[in-house]
Image 1: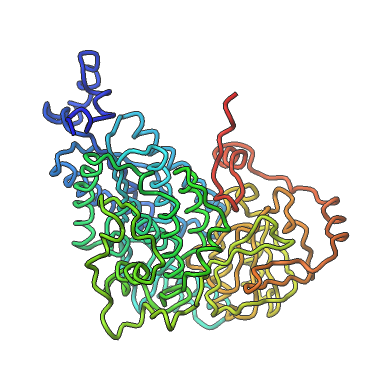
Image 2: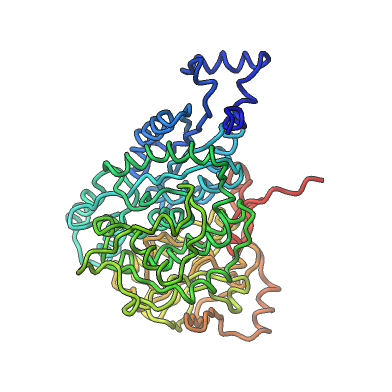
Length: 561
């Protein structure tokens, strides 16, 4: 391929007499004469000191830049924002979490489009910036590689961030002291990296690797490790190879590739957030992906990984036995993955996995197919009169398959959490947290504080929780989220009253309010949307543009007339 074809976008910015001003400015930031002849590689860094998930990413971005330079490109590092779910959780600040996914995708698109980068490497370290990076890649459709920032090392006594949330509930239940809670708080987070279980960050990293948009084992490396540094160096070489071969994200992000990602998420027992993030990524790639696809693929996708939050093991322990590559090889050999899907290596998934060795004998983290944790997928899409557009539950089987109880209704996460901590939630209750959906929040907060408190108080097997909000990947128990239509648009979840009977049936994939249709219509006629205190700023813009959680909670620009 000729030099100009390798610089399909950057040559418009730097070639010719008329672009002398552009070159003058680039010389000031370190471009040499020779650099103007190289493909420009944007390195999107999500570095910040806001959260341990991202605090090390600037060093990784420099490694990726070095890799791109060694391969013949000219790297340009730029930043985008991130927010911390773990810090904002349980507060109104959590409204901004899902909103940040759209801001990050928009900002990467804006910088890459404006500066004329020929290729893109994006490094994400927590659950919202990872799908956002891939959404931007799909929009831009320029040769791109995603790099995961890596997982955190375990804290003392194998603790992680969820240990702290559950300790709050245990403290409220009187089973641990002030000093014991403080000791958990001080030791759970030892340094850089994303939350340590198969929570949303590690789930999305694994899904993106299965999708083909990151290099082998990028999802299964510690944040501070030689393997992660090498992953960044290799990404620089890989993106130049993609430019030379003219392989773009939409060549990789096919419908079959998304099915591979869903299969791997199920095998790992991953976060419910994967449902909306994969749908949002597919939308940007112009691939049709619906809730029904999760049901269809899930019927033949067993849960094999005994990992937190529902299981025993941390991501760091899965890394020690080989990460997810041997799992993907097993799934491929079983006929559960599409091996002919293209990946960022320039090779197919099957070619990438051809020489992968199996897990060591005696390991107990990844089960065999004849002894699964669950024989089919744990991401259960439910319908019923409470969720005519769908709802998403994480059912591994440990929670039970059916729950029948009476509603205890709360109009916010804070009110529900306080009731749990105060002992006002008892066995047999179905906690209903509403007006927390994409529009109602606005922002669709995660309910880790209530679910952590439930588990900490020992109520995990005795109560259920449903919400039009969503759940952290660290949530577990009998919980159903993404209930659609949401309360803020008049969905049936807005019409539930204290004491109503609710039935959640995972086998039948139904969630129903046990009242007559006439009573439901009577309540609907009397319903008035509560007034929101959000009237300006990004949250108001988001509320105006965001769609249903059942379609990925994506923002949709109005059509151009």
